Length: 462
Image 1 (tube, helix red, strand yellow):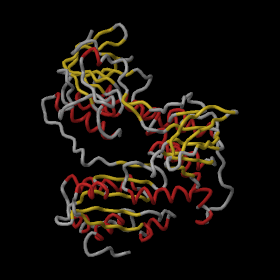
Image 2 (tube, rainbow, N blue to C red):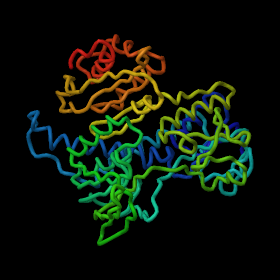
Image 3 (cartoon, rainbow, N blue to C red):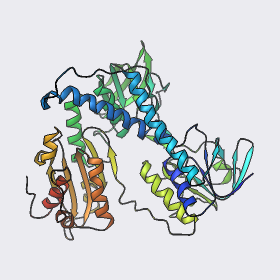
Image 4 (spheres, rainbow, N blue to C red):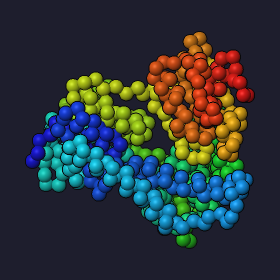
């Protein structure tokens, strides 16, 4: 069997990026993937197909709600669900084939099948055993469920099943008010479904800046979402062609149930390391099932590394990509680096929600003195022109040094706007640095500058 400098197990965002970058650095690289296509959960049944459906349904919403306001008259479009699903699959195919092309371009060998590690320096796929000086575990994660909730991916579904329903449901119960639940909930809400979100905590989007979360919930409620917060789900079961969810309210232990055509279980994800043989190898694990690593992504077994959703940290494709790049550098004898303090998060609803750095709650807990600069999109000419003036930009800066500590945006294009602050934070910029930077008019980005101005003498347009 072939010998490699590096074998990466898993071809998701972390794995394929690691493999390509290692090849760019001159290593002989292979990547193990058992799916028929490359790209992992993200490209096949996660980030990319969900964004396709979000895009399609956003245009549908605009056609129904805003076209006539702009003088675009005529019958609003109807939905051909099969065609929308075909569009989604075309988007997926284009991306996965693109990774396959990049593998060929960079001379990365695709070892097709499911891999295990029988011993350090060996990777087994079927009956074949390949040797490698280094191995990177990039096996990603799988949907987590709850006791009493049996997923069948038809009526009681995870995000995977929610992307490919046989027909558009009239009602959906989403268990969990995190990113996946709210994004897929938005898709079906725009398609006409009644969407109810049941969340164990007393607020949506756990870990998000509280002010942003509160405003986000108000906007989603206005769109038609229903929220049941502080509710512990006891069970979800099929019933009369649909399903029923039973939950108890934490405030008084009262029990309730709600029926729906579809139940989406969106209670987070867990590392997927089954079948690798890590226990037999003696690889140390964290209490919550992640692979334990040091500051250089190395496991307790020499020559074996781990990245992405398989290790501690936010389960985000771009975090995995950064780690893939960094560990490739380390294996090639260079210095790999990931700034974990500057990893943005985005929710691709309408409006989008994005954040980077610290929340107000984290700064208060740490005893850091800070100042807040806020600017509403209602004061942004471009946002008003396209009926997207809800939300605001919020910048948190050190009270003494003015250094930017965090940013939270709810509004149009938030997922792109946040990166201006990511770059600023990477360079240790002050809010004044952002405020003194000329921004084109009219753009959404002016709201970011205005929020930076609000950290000083004050915004101009508010």
